Length: 139
Image (cartoon, rainbow, N blue to C red):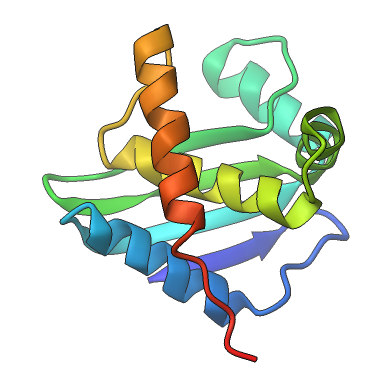
């Protein structure tokens, strides 16, 4: 089950489309969907989480808490909408594309992908792009 929660004015349009896409990401990695909660927030909210739980005094776009057991993917993913907006501008991409990248990024961590080394980060970026292409909206 995928849930979307809001600690800011932002709200995700077409939650069911995003939920279906995230489930497709999990299945494409031969994993089983458990419970994933996305919490959309602002910089201040995410910074406090970063300080409290990780002791990092930095702004970030995403923090994920992984509760995965075996192949059952579960966790809480906190997303700063302010960081996503800034990153979209910095990378010169549409907000929706950057948001999809971040949403996929959290799930990919749960699937075992890392991003600390240059090699791992390159693989993560490749996987993000691959998963963004799986997103489809029926018109």
